[in-house]
Image 1 (spheres, rainbow, N blue to C red):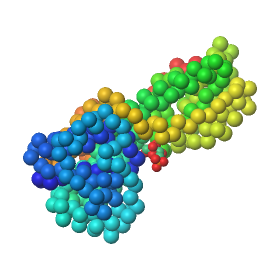
Image 2: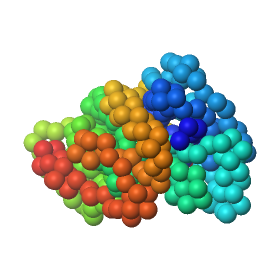
Image 3: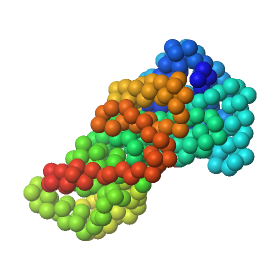
Image 4: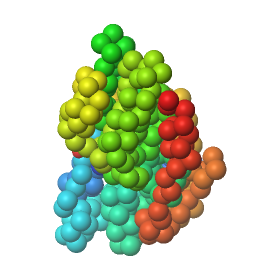
Length: 319
Ligand code: F6P
């Protein structure tokens, strides 16, 4: 195909700009025209689309957020919304679209592919909760932000002999919580994938206190939530002063790490290669470090395993 579009949809993630840059420049280098679609599927419905050139994406590889803005678009879930989007594509001659986002965005990409506009999804979310890929764009940067923040919390916990209960993002997935918990030396990590017992957490805090440990980090995944209540409960059970911190959207911002920039570039390039060969209705992913692609419906039906071994390691070495 010769004319494609690119959009970002759902929650933003650091590295989305690097992916847009790769898509735009790969397409141009292959003699294709490429159009930026603003604010996800809304831009497609409203015709908020512009042609991009190699300079449209200059100096964005290091920037967080997304040059194309992003949004969640309920109208795109209706037949009317899909038909409006299809009409915009037909008017502009767009034959394919690269959709950078999460599972929700891929459902839209499958619906549009069924209606003749071939879409390729790129996994862009800090949560790393997309089953067909071991890595999603934004995950590494978000985790490094968490580590930086928790290290700062550790300083003040140390000064006050306190416990810091830190809630991290991840929607219903505990991947950010587990990995940052290991990286920050958290005493306990609470994730939605596995059962937990606050009595066990309190017991571990008291046992390690006996060996001389004076401050504690407990990482709580967003899918567990209630971090204020957890802090109060742990304080009541242990007598150790506890404070809750919800890190929130700070985790979605910032300059992408090397890993996010490189993976975004590889995936963006791969997506355009698929469209160049008129292959659509696919999601790009990473398996054993290699870039691969899957049928969107197949990708959406997959289930991501949780790293129970790492959870076990975390519990073993945080004593
Ligand atoms: O999917 C990314 C994410 O940041 C999740 O971790 C979180 O649950 C959600 O988006 C927050 O969404 P919003 O930005 O709409 O509040």
